[in-house]
Image 1 (cartoon, rainbow, N blue to C red):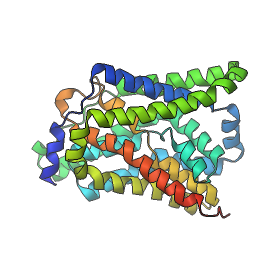
Image 2: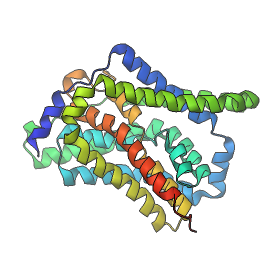
Image 3: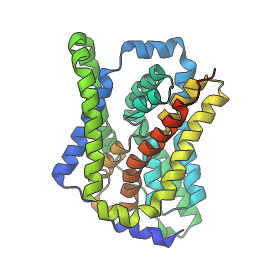
Image 4: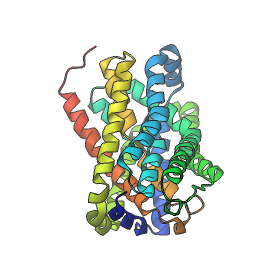
Length: 315
């Protein structure tokens, strides 16, 4: 295990209480905007032609967390970096995946459908996957390393479920209800809200970077390779899993993007909840991983989308 990485555990990202409230509000607003684009037809389309949607959901909710577990065993980072990678993998797809999928000439309808399913399912699967794979990782360390190197993972699963429900569930339910009850109003507001969500997301990333610029410049090189390999694994897993299932090329692009663009903002919101992760746990490695994921997956996603946008969509 690389002892030089242990310095990350003592890092504290600079987020004031008002900054954390802003992070949560922005995340909820983004999810509300996503929900306005979700219609019952998206779920009906999945029932009529489920193969691509099922493959995409399996790739996100089951394959990525399992492969992440294997990756952290292979890379052998510090426990907090490993747990940060596992938590990011347990989160649903990121809010910019639909835009990136459109830019990549993927299946946008499938992208929106997967966003609907993964976001809704995250209320259960995010706490479950982190608890399951996180505890499996801790148990592996306990069995193969000196016991004083690791501590049991004692996370309040109910509190995590509650936080995910507040940040994802309530905004999505509100968006779905408004979309159903007030379709004309929804058509008028969904484009401005969608653009506003993207703007707020960019502001959130810029604000996070500016408030912690010294930490990023001093320590990001320590986690760069982990995030690079993890994101590459996610994109590759989504693409080749869908190829293995014989899906059309446009669907492969979409599933790769949906698997590789993770809602790292949710991961940060969970990490900064003291009822889930008490400050004395010193989880600097987790927060640096999630924060850099929030930047890197946009860079990698847009780069891949630009490359695919110049390639023909084959059958």
